[in-house]
Amino acid sequence: MTPPAPASSSKTKSPRSDNRERILAAATRLFAERGYDATSVSAVADEVGIRAPSLHYHFASKEQLRDAVLEGLLSGWKEIVPRVLMAATSGPSRFAGVLAEVVRFFAEDPSRARLLARECLDRPWAVRAMVEEHLAPWMSLLTEYLERAKTEGRAHQDLDPKAYITEVVLLCIAHFALAPVTLAVGNAADADLDEEDWEHRRLTELRRICAAALYLPRT
Image 1 (cartoon, rainbow, N blue to C red):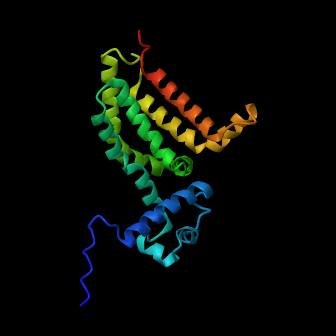
Image 2 (cartoon, rainbow, N blue to C red):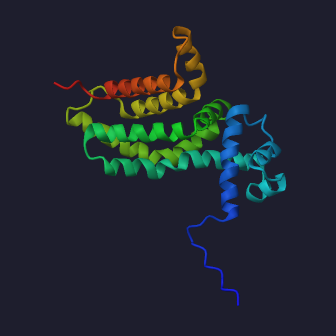
Image 3 (cartoon, rainbow, N blue to C red):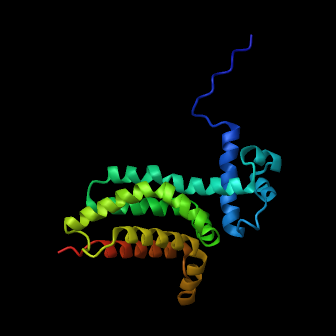
């Protein structure tokens, strides 16, 4: 008698859920590279290695696919930032932890930054609505933390917390979205520029700029 097959673990992803994630990843890359209008559903399906009808099983339309991509980009911050704030208890390490998460998120897939930049220019009203829905909770947490840093005399007293957070996020998006251009700028001054070293140097300066704008110099 053939023994029964072992029960599959509940943590194992089904082929359908795996396909959905692959579709979202491919759509993120193609929308970022070509733009929404220049990317067809067939092109996304080809990138994943499935047929267009299979893609429509998960997303009824290209517009629904774009909304799902953006929802995925923004919704994760509801969990990431509060977790960082709880884990880091000291002032500088808390800020460094949040900045590190933002950098890690875009470094994992720079097309995320390029897509957000494109969408902010092409559909600012739609992105604004999603930002308000997904980022408002952790914006309040970070604002409260920065206000406390001012009260404790660690941050600049004229700091505008909400404006500061907004500009830091925009700096991170621009850092990764415009990386090919910045590489050309570096090459103009150094023909033997190493791409990995250049990225490290730029991230070091990004962290220094953000910290200098936030914290008072140590005595």
